[in-house]
Length: 372
Image 1 (tube, rainbow, N blue to C red):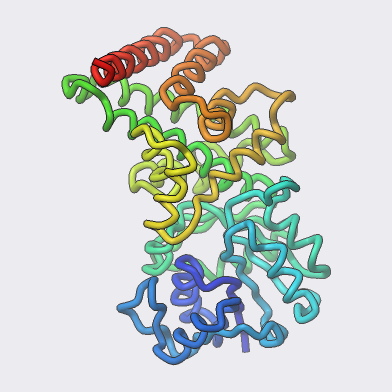
Image 2: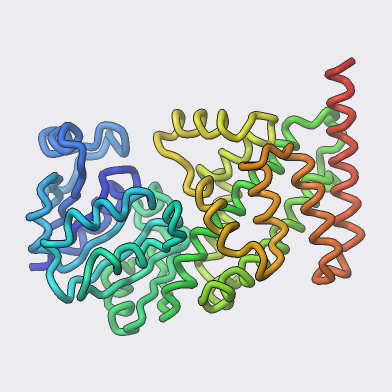
């Protein structure tokens, strides 16, 4: 009998439990909130996530880590800030040869560790698998996702791929564990920038800038191109394969689709673009969505890892907007000019600067109108 344990009882963990229930004999959700675990087991539903759908009969929840000892598969569906504590709790009960699949997309605060690096420090003798891509909870619940699956042992990656693959679940396998994990982390940071641009557009003083010639529309197109190159440079610097985050991969599809559907990190950046200070925006988004955006602290961790060795204007100016109090418009304009002057976008240089100048002028007028 194959048993899978899911670390977490949040939205993604609940969606994963529903999906895996049709692929393994038993699914156990491991959580630390005894009250929530009791509700899940008694009502057979999650009180907040997919609450109108009953959990399959082979899904249960527990706070007892001893139940994990019977699991051949463990899925990490936690916020990155909680991985180390939970991994330490379950370590005595994880059998040698267990396959651990990470779905988290963040870096540990203070240590800069990727999720599976944390797991490797706390657990020994397990196969470590990274899964990342276009996999929002609602899509995973319906079995419609595009994911990259990575393990240094390609046979293990192929096994997980066969296990989760379905009519709407598309998978690709690789041995680039670092690159697949970084793809999700970087995506969360860049989505904050894309959200900021949309927020600035919403706060614009004149409606006539809307349409195909809108400088904001142009800014999004250019930022998307620049983000691809910058992400690949970061992945290469930190030991991954830059091709893992190319435009044809599922990892980068995650970025493109998350912009369209306004993910949590995009929503956070959107509020900052409207003029809300980052700390207040963080409180608003956390209250509305029930969890903190991973991109907030990951921006700081990636900035500290990469500042110096390579130039990362998107990451740098997202960091200054979140942590150094720089106005979102100023951060965008300065970052755009650095991208234009970098030499990597010679054909787009004039377009980048023109869009940045126009946006800067529009918001200067807005400030003038407010003061007036």
